Length: 316
Image: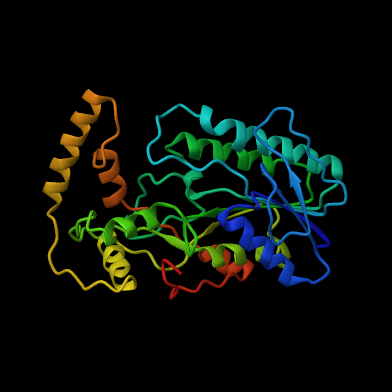
């Protein structure tokens, strides 16, 4: 790699990736790309909004593209309504790939999401989902991610790789895990009873490492698709307990029965339907809290040499 472009460079993962690339080789030139220019660890910055039809994308001299830019998925999505995602995720990726083909870019890595696979039924509930599962995305966000993957994989760029990370955590993130920790700290998140579900996660540093390994690996990763997930898949109650411990809070030995949560969710559904507003507790929230999203990143470990560190703190 001599000149790399990182889209979504101002984001949570993007900034860390740019720093990692700069550490990897002192002579590598890293171009950050995003909607609004700001200070960062990049050598140069390209201000571009991939979601705009008239976006001007110049990749002259760029040999490697790391495509992280996206639109974050909402907590709740209406099935079939992909208008909020298509412009950036699908059309933006198509514009970037076309520019890469014209400029002769040699390597292209796309950071997708396990939402492109879905979290549907699998034959053996005792095993995590892997890359052999046929993608069946359940949300508009997931459907758009899968379509964007196809654009990348079917391009004429010599070497392309797709990564599907699970929920990303780490210091500085502002996602669901941080909101859950804050609710626990304020006493607004009850200790849910153990229901043995499993939620896969990956630390941001491990995802950044995977991005680099997918490009520099000597194995034939071309046209490969890899789930990025460490081996630490916790139940919601286990995660609750670990977050309390990490924040220095005392353990709690009691729990709220599941039937209380389901009853509260039904009330939330009813009030939400009447008021037209989303309630803090409804059936969709309960499904996410008590459901499983269990994946394995073993293929990436075996083929790309990715090494996960499972002992990192969730808020560090």
